[in-house]
Length: 252
Image 1 (cartoon, one colour):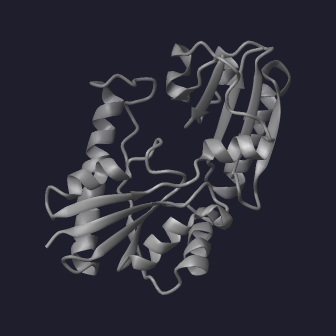
Image 2: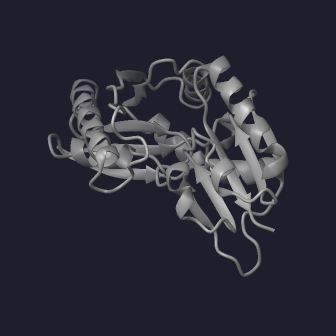
């Protein structure tokens, strides 16, 4: 029988961001599967706090996250480049690890839960990986949406995401060079690429560890706060061993 994959968005980090639908799904799961990354530290604790608060009777299965080869991918985001090839191999390895864990911990016809930071639709690989899992064991996905880091960022700064009559662009630091910078949400930017692409007068709204006790917020013209954001980011990552951050760039 086909198992159901409950792909559950759990928000940016605040247990209060978890929706009623997500709580119901966590409680309906036979087990919740988490890809356990090295040096996750506080991140693991926050996730466990969410489970303990909302679904204490649902077991959590930690699956070691396979390592990803990043040696040849820097700066190469082409669909046929080293970055794409390395991500593809990494997804295959993740799918193999999850398939084995699901087969062991969830009966046929049961529910396998997957906790996803933010929302499963936005810069997250869980659904792609589960497509590969379904090649080896029958698996039907059901997605429970969550509050994204984008929403958490604009709420924390008490700003609107959009301006009247203007589009919004969501991208990564790797692709920021391709953007016009009018209203750009940037995720996954370990290099603080805005320092290279933005005008000094562009306004940046930056946030890290959104919704957690360690939340950091900075904003201002890039020419005034850009280096401070980069320095703060590096110090925070060194302190915690990980960082999740996002920012909005806005041209005057």
